[in-house]
Every structure is written in C-alpha cells, then in structure tokens.
Image 1 (cartoon, chains in turn green, orange):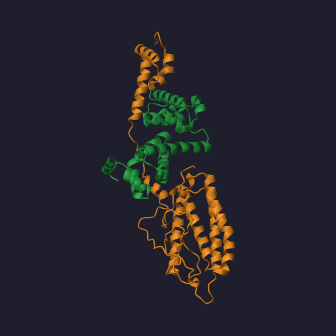
Image 2 (tube, chains in turn green, yellow):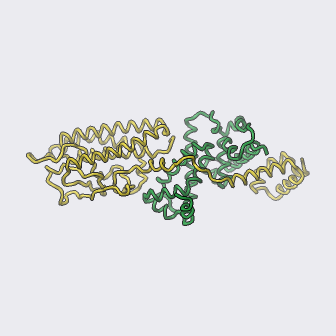
Length: 185
Length: 282
C-alpha cells in the first residue's frame, strides 16, 4: 500500500477495516497490517533486542491478531489493543524461550544475575541509543522499552510482566544508568 | 558535592522517585537544592532526562523484508469453502482433541461398517455410482472454518432427501468440489460422476498439500515436542482415513462410512491449519 493510502487510512481510522477483518476479510486485515506493521515491528525488535527476532515476532503478533479480532469489542482504540497484544506475544515468547534456552545468551540475562553480567555487553566504543538499548539485559530492556519508548505506566508494565510496580521502577532506573554509561554521557 | 539537606548518595537513592515525580515536597526541595549545588548530580539528571526524551522520540523501525506474505500464508488456510461455525477461535482445537477425534474415528469406523453394511447395502442389480471412496461432503461437526476463500467455486448446497436424491442404490455419491457446509445437515448430491469425485479428491489433496508445505516450512520455528504431537496425530488420522477408504471400498453405499471419511479428512485439514498458525516456539 502506498504511503499516501496509509495516511488516508489512518486518518479515517481503523474501525471499518477492523470490522471487516473480524468477519474474515483478508484484504481489510492486510490494510490494518500495513498501517500498523512498523510500530509493531519496532516494539517487537526493541523488546527482543534483535531485528530478526522482531520480524518473526511481528508475524506472530499479526497471526494472533487475526485469531483474536472477533474478540475485540472496541473498548479501546484498535492500536492500543494491538500493542497490548503485541507486548503479550513478545513476553510469552520470551518466557517460552527461557524454558528451553540456556541463559548464556547475551540478551537473556535474568534479573538475578543482572549485576554480574549486565555490564559486559556495554564495554564498547560509542554507540547510538537504539544499539545501546538492544544490548541491555532482557529485563531492563523490556521495562525501558515499555516505559520510555512505548509510554506504558509502571502499573501496566508490572501487570504484563508479572512483577511489582517497584520492580519495574528499579529495572527502569538500572536501564537508564546503563544506557548513560554506554553512551558515555 | 553535598548540600545541607542531601548528599550525592542520598540523591542517587531518591532519583527514581524524583524522576517519577513521587517525592514528597520536603524531599523534592532537598533534592533540588542539592542539584543547584552539585554538578555531578545535575549532569546525571540531565543525561537521564535526555535519554528518556530521545527514547520517546525514536522513529519507527521498518522490517528488512516483506512480512505480510508469511502472515498471509499462515492465516490463509481455508481453500475448501466451509460454512461458518459459531466461533472462529474453535480452529485452535487443542491437540488432544485431535487425538481423541482420530481415535474415535478409528474405533468407530469398523463398527459403523458392520452396522451399515447390511442396512445400506445397494439393492441387488442397481448401479453404484462409484466405488472410489474419496468424499469431501460437508460434515457437521468437523473443524470447519468461517474464512471462505473469496471467489472460490462453492457449489450450491444440496439438501438430504431433496429432489435430486436418487434411490439408495445410486446415492453412494459425493458432492462436487468444494462443498459447502450446512449447519447440522450433511449435504449430498444425487449423483457424482467419476470426474466429480476425482475433482473432490484433488481439492482435498491440494488443501492438505498446501498446509503440509506451510507446516514443513515452519517446522524449525515450532517447539520440538509440539511437532512430535502433531506428527503423531497426523499418523492416527491417516490411519483412520486409510481404514475408512478400505471400508468404503468394500461397501461403497455406506453413508456413515462416507461421513467417517469426510470427518477424518476434515480433521487432517483442521490439524494442519492449527499447526500452520501456531506461533513460533510455543
């Protein structure tokens, strides 16, 4: 879909396409995908710390959206509902991977080992903010992306991640300090 | 680096709440007095605020490839038009239901054959339309899908017992390609030519092949235990299909065996659809 068409679509809102897609209209769903793909991909890539993983998760998000659309009641904006669903898909994927994969992967440093391992990836030369975010430990990265990039509140993050609001605040502060260090500010 | 009310260490501890705006007036006042005197802490605060602002203003990323094709392949399962079922979510039937259904098919196929072999046997001397058991007639309970492929060639539903239904001897027939499903009514055509039946077989074959290709491509993304369960279920369903076909070859007039075969084929399609739409690593 052309950019102009995307803008026109966004201006009109998603409601018509949401209703059509919920009824099985794949073309309407494709229009919804085109309108929201970049935002969803940005969320997935930044939360996972990997563009490749973000692409895979983005596909999962839209497949899940297709399945769940009949349950969308319009109580919030479609974009809000979609992003909440995307966060859940990413978090569930991380949980699933966590059960299978070893914890040696750079991006999957758990909270308990945070202090011992978090700094290792940050010893690099100058980097930009996006790169520095991708190198954060998983827990801190997720909270930072959800709070500072996506604008979720600590209470919402705590609920989605199954942590306390205080834990969310602590992770956010750690993330900010690590980013400052990485960016040599 | 210190003030009368707050030193750097105390400021560091208070910084998260300061940034959140949740410090009480007294502590906020102390923090601000410290900030006015301490370059180190003022710099820290400024850097963190800038990082947050930059993060909030980061532009959207763009995928390096077209993701829609992969999404479409996973949601575009239905090729055989099937009438709407009450809720689309039912497509995500737990694997154990597939096993149970397949086991039920296996266990009942033989019984069904025995029960129907005599009652539905064609009248002596009458012509049986076709022995070949492939049948894609509608099945009431099998996992259908509400997403009908636009532009597909769905034939008109044919009511049981309608004017087109021929006597039992010749009613061992199946619908044409892409049969519609009618709620609770197995649609049957009065007769079916060999060409119809072959076409039906082709439609089912294409659907299953397409889904198998998708599942095969996504195999590496799925949890190995999930893949193992899917494969076991497919083996069970394949066995049920083979049994039903064998039974139908012996008794091509059996309507119930027809239904069993259709049910088994639908179960295979449904299981493959479910597998094709599973999220990665679940």
